[in-house]
Length: 203
Figure (tube, rainbow, N blue to C red):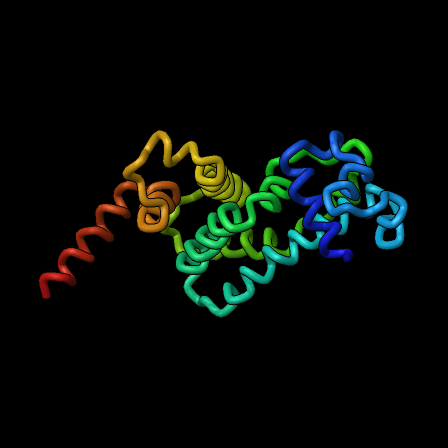
């Protein structure tokens, strides 16, 4: 029953917003009495924090294999693909975790919390990429913000259907690597790599 309540709350919060969804509305969606929900959650804040935790755990499980990828650039690419997949496969969780401000009924510190381990790992991967010298002399936090906003923007456009509407021939799955290279690797280095790939094919 707890999972059923969370699923109903997830759909309603993503659709109507945190402050427009009451415990009574969640209960009505699953034909349950409002009082009965308090057997599983102390209050609305407890419910939304439990939902946030469930979404973060889902995201963490999708990223579990990243630690096995030694090459930081490949790890960065795979992490970006996972982010896009999460937005498309878990649109409600993606909306709640990455696109919504903290609910007014929830303690701000509890909602924001400390940086999630997935972000800490992402930042470390970016640092390792910078250490190769390929990306140029860029502060790590600038690189992190640039990369995150780029992938997040793609994910948001894809999850809302706007990317497909404006660019109907754009295949996100096959084009993602080129988009990421465009964002991260200087033009001169991209040209060198493309030439190296062409020379290798001719051998």
